Amino acid sequence: MFDYTGVAVEVWEKILLEVIDLPYVLDTLTDRETDHWRHSSLYHDLKVYTESEHQRRTLRLVCRSWRDFADEYQYRWITYHLPESRNTWEHKYALEAIRLITDDAVNPNPQGTRFKSRPRRILLHITTDADMVVFRNTIDYCCPKVTTLFVKCVDRYRDQIFEYMIEHSSKLPMVRCLNIPTPQGHPGPLRAVSAAFPALTTFEMKKDSPYMLKEGDHLVLRDLEMLGTDISAFPGDSFRKWDLPGIIQLNTPVGRYPHQPPHITLEPIKSLGANLRLLNIWKAYAPIRLPVEFWTWCPCLVEFLSFFSWIFLDSPAPTGHPLKRVVHWGYNDDVGNPLATETPRVVRNPAVLHSLECLPPGVTHFVVAQTWTAYMNLLARQSLYSRSQCENILLVMNEICAKRSIRVEDQDRVALGEFLAK
Image (tube, rainbow, N blue to C red; front, side):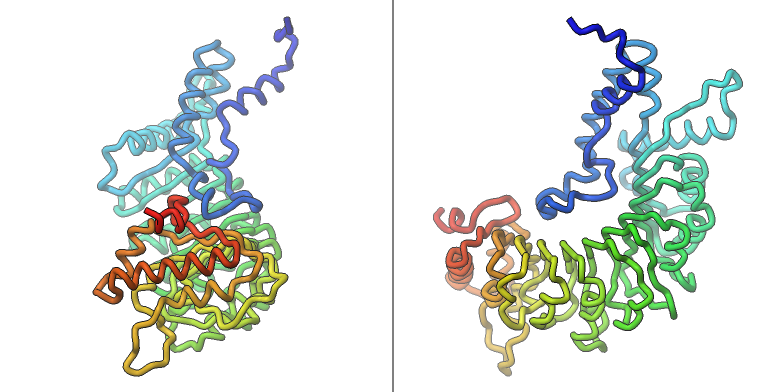
């Protein structure tokens, strides 16, 4: 029988950490080789984290040394909720963690036994002045080990939050995944983030209204792999100063600025597309033709998420392009073909059917990001299509994909052929 008494303490710590640590839930990046559409929901998954907490609490019952070790990893995940959710155990847990860590930092135990736990992931919703006090305490005392930080707020606190984080970035030395609100009054927020958090691997900065470009503002984040912001606000020549050599994922809307012609709207994608493996156009404000040059802008693209009735493929993609997976946000399909030229407009099949024909030959999966029943209801909304027309659209979609050996399925993995056979 193996004698465990001779195992070094460092080895035991590594073994125990494997039990309570999570391979993706507290990570700052998704696996670049995986199917993002299917696996991104695993990242920051509270249910998986909760299960790991059960394991941690079991370990601390074994002996005093295991208890001390496990207690150093308490409160790894803190979620400070919106007001309507503040009676949940999760919110009370967050308040307890912030209070304990803050109290220990301000008034350490006189006997020298400090509260050691430091969270790794924090989400804060700021809606009141009292929340701002919690926010400042969290930044000041709870963040030395934090790798993932999400901050959401109402508009009145945008600038205060941004300025405080930039000024106290030394309190956040390990942050690699940062999601913050766009400030309204800062002269150069992107340059400020680049200077304060130069080691970011994931950065998101979003707001409902358009981001107003500041003269000379740009990002320099050489380790960044995922960017989520409205890049359509920037003219193409502004990207000459951007330095993002490692970017492989881009999440952005397009068409928010109607005064810009389509080639101007897409110029930022051209500027950042050289190494992209995943492109998610999560909102389209107007129909746009995607030129054939797009495939040379994004020669490494493996997964493409978009509105394929409004982001309209102009012509067939080159045969050698590596695209494998396509996810269709179908919410604009109930307007027929928005690029049809008939006047008055004649209702025609959704443009996604044409886009399917133009995809690269290597595509293996096409996902409609709804259930098939919900997609049928969407097509029939406002009586645009009759029931038989809706069924015919799905039949044509299935025929196109079958001809090209593409598996077509809905968000629940139900193949379109299976749905039609019912």
